[in-house]
Length: 249
Image (cartoon, rainbow, N blue to C red; front, side, top):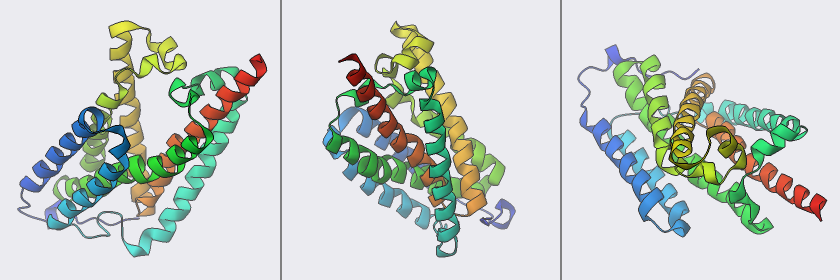
């Protein structure tokens, strides 16, 4: 299990690095979801990962504090692989039932070509979404919070902020996912409920990701689970949509 310096052992830590990190995360979220061209997302994510790591190091966090220590890479990798296997099996079981297939039907994936799907699932998701979010929330932010308030508060606060992080990207998703739309409804009410549901589920996911990071000692473990839920979701959704289209022909 990863050891993080207890808050009582680190006295007088300044608040400004936390403020800088939170400001950087807010700016990244707004730019990425509202201002930056879509084709630049991967560059923003990779550059942002180096930026938040620099903030963590300047705050005095060690690589091990941030879940990036060499000694924990193998356990983290093994935990990550295990998560991928478990999530894949879960998708396979869900795909065996109509309600499960309906839940995985996402119109955002419908028109993707095969090469575009592979790029999205194997490049943009792991080296964009997963890399940045795990470095930002489970490596840097978690470590900075744990050194000031302790591990429990670090889990709670980082998970809540991770949930709030998904407000902007979840706006309008009820119109793109038939399964989600059937649950939350249409119009403004459906949009609000979709956002609230996204915040709730990603907050819970944030707790699980943080637990994996602690148990394994490495951010590779939550990276594995994070990629599996997103990346394998693309593969299954794309496959189900095309299977249904062929059946209708």
